[in-house]
Length: 238
Image (cartoon, rainbow, N blue to C red; front, side):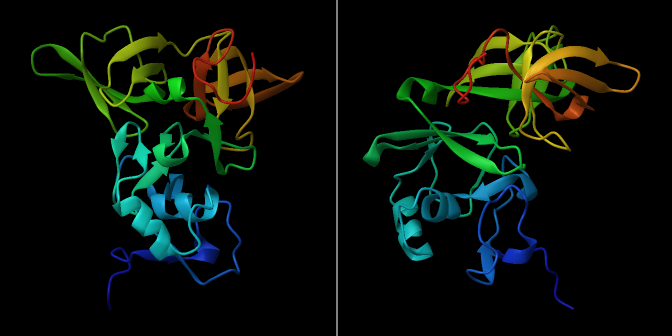
């Protein structure tokens, strides 16, 4: 029996919940290639251009736009229609002078937030792995697959760093700690933004206050955005 893993398409009824597309419009949907984000946490560039931004009416038209180098993700021109776009990525379309940041709504779906050109050079990345490498340096692995190496002992797993894109220079460090502003990226409270009240190390959970409501979620689902206000534009105030 042939293996299913190599397919370039998936059926719409089994599409990842991060996509917000009608199920019955067609049978098949583009499957993202392996890349900086997992398949179930990303949207292919073709679908972004055709279905989200409405810059093309068909997959062939969307591919033509992408092949011509008119779409930039995190400061790099991407020409593969199946390239995975995920949480906190920066999308630029210079021809129409538009810049977007990928965020998440309260249904767990990825959405595009229009932002300004200045925002295109900054990205927030969450540290998901930390290890020592040769030379006594520390290597941090981010939620989007990128790695940075250096004297980074003060940065821990769960912390968020602000990077410049595309060069990856570390601009700011936001520790996972009380009183920080954060968004929940998975689970029952996905998409809610609140202030961290308590981090419970025994249960590995975090309690947040959001719009007068107290919620508790896994520490792995919390993405710190900043102190008094988000370090990047995510469409909310403090």
